[in-house]
Image 1 (cartoon, rainbow over the protein chains, first blue to last red):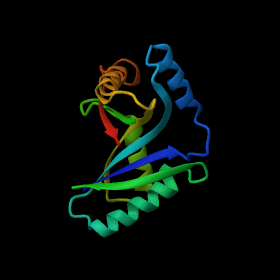
Image 2: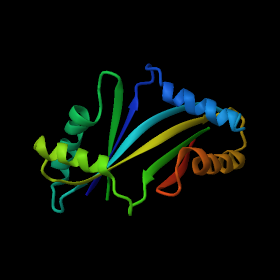
Image 3: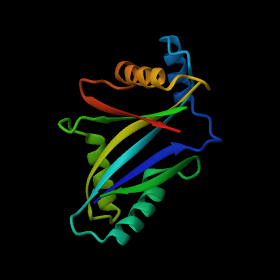
Image 4: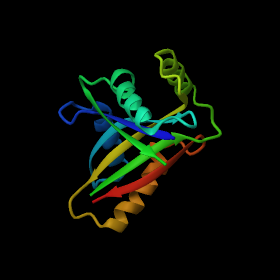
Length: 81
Length: 81
C-alpha cells in the first residue's frame, strides 16, 4: 500500500522559488507561463498487510507532524491501490 | 489552464533524502513505513486562451529541458481543467 503526500506552500505565502522558475521559463521563451508554484511530494510504501484505515490515520499524522510545516504549508494525502 | 509536472529520481538512482526521511519516520514510531521516495512538483499556470495542444507540447519540452535532469530524473506532465 502506497501513500502519496503532496506538500505545498499555502496560497497566501509568497513562493520565491516558483517566481524564479517562472522568470526562467519566460526568459527561455515560454512567455505564456503566468505563474509557477513549487512543492514537494513523498511516495510512502507501507509494509504489506498494513490495515488501510490505520495507514490512512498514520499518514495524516506524520504528514502534519513531520513532512509539512503547517504554519506555512498545506498538504494532501492520497492512497494508491 | 494548469499543468502539473512531477519530477522524481529514476527508480534505479539512490534517493538518500528519501532514506533519511524513512529512518526519521521509523524512529518516530511509524515502523510500518518501508520505503520513502521524495520528488518535487510544479503547478504551472498558462495564460488564458492558450491552445491546449501547444501548452501540452511546451510543458513536455520545458519539463525535459528546464525542470528535470533527464540523466537521473524522470517526469510526468498532467493537465487540469
